[in-house]
Image (cartoon, rainbow, N blue to C red; front, side):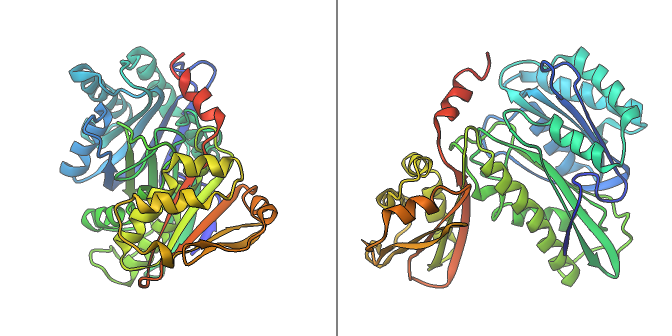
Length: 406
């Protein structure tokens, strides 16, 4: 596997574009992704009972249609809590795009992100589609424009691509995502669009994605809020010409490994770009009795507001970490826990068997002052492990969200 340049247009046959349509002031706010041939489509979606109209639209296509071929995206307006009118706007969006692309409406997926409760400005949206279709390009630059157009409070665009070999053929998996706030996924996170030219059946594609989100998007949190719009779509057009993957063979395992790299990369970059964040905070729980136990413990630490504020202050307040583990619901012996802090500035054991070591506060502060920080908790119960990603909690998070609508 080799990391290559690009994102959603790195794989053969995928075209994209991003524009400033006028939904937001002076910012790119619409994007389109298109494959020149039909794709097997897989998806995972928010577990929030309150689901946005595009989530419901996409679920119907992913669950009931054999193929999909394009995605129309907008930022600024979430099209959530908009009733039958909002769902009708998804249909209208799909019909407009289908007419211009010579497809059927049920081949067009939609995605929205932004303010909840507002109706889409359909005149602007439809004009945006008319503008984008002639601009669609398979260039890496066009893919980057699309990644930029789906941003809301994100400070950087997020895209990645890798190349692997399946059945003697070069295969590419690429993707883009957005996510900075309202991130605490229980399926995947916010908006993520993954493309591949691999030949793989719809069944195996969905199986690979559903399994992978558990260790990637489901392991990040910024603020504990699960969005109404969380969507991850994976499109495979088969243009690489590899023997179609229809079973769990070695090619399937290699595909899953590459997909995991792409999803992990995007997930970590969303956590690092959390609203107001100054640092990526990674938590590894090792030597657990089971994977489930390790997952529960690691996620409890990254979601703790007290831990997140300590990270913001570069404060080695390890008691908050042990406390968060204690209320997680997972059983362990706190008197057997070893805890380490690690970053580019070094690694330091903070507690051993549940008691503080004679560590240097100065060294700990230096380690915790880096842009990427890891806490490693060894609970000495088995050989299972899990890793979760979050970020610090800063004053800017409140500033961003206090006046988000205005």
